[in-house]
Length: 132
Image (tube, rainbow, N blue to C red):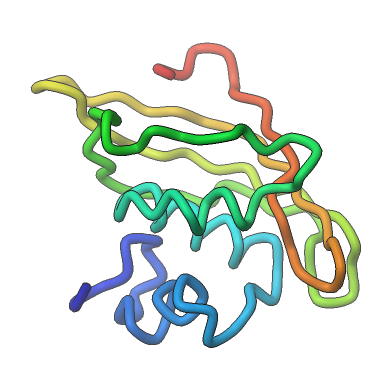
């Protein structure tokens, strides 16, 4: 992919989430991992999503080829811990998407932990009223 990164960082994909997706570098913070996972949903990178998911909560598959949403944008609403010196963190976000001709939004608090030195997604709580 060329052009801006889907995560909304303002950087080009190749020097943002593309480096994480390709394994050139690891996500340094929980927020960076959150952004890379959002971009992976946009690009339908199932292998990356599963690899960045904690083994205790990871589903066997995601079937993204059957996924209908067109992802429109990500807003990070808040971050709790999840920095380079932390072992856990939370990221509150809102993701906008379209299904058919209708726009929707989902809001979630995602929890991340550092496992074997790298950040992984543990689980999330979708806020009531989200269109998921």
